[in-house]
Image (cartoon, rainbow, N blue to C red; front, side):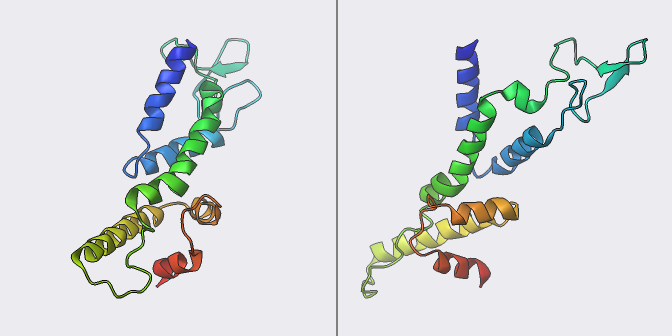
Length: 164
């Protein structure tokens, strides 16, 4: 069973991308925010009365998972998945997009075509990163740009490009 859980987790981790980021954030928010009632049911889980006035979670197709919160179902994988999604936002995505690649040499004089290509790649990478970051919840965005893993040399330049 552990092998199956590990394989499933790896599949989930492999699907984290700019295109799926919003869904992963929603999933993780749901998984961490679902309050569990005293009877073990998750808020929003349908309940049924069992003859003696007590309620119990309705079993979904008899699978016995009703009443287990998403965090309980995910177990130790919940925190790992949360860390992987955050790592993607902070480190993997900016590096994959080459958002902070040098756009021109330090002397600023090179006008060769290769410099133009790298400048265009850095600009399009920054544009793509800004597109993803612009739809992040503010607290996640703030944590990302304040993280020591965030791969930018001068954060004020990045913040200037966002703000103006």
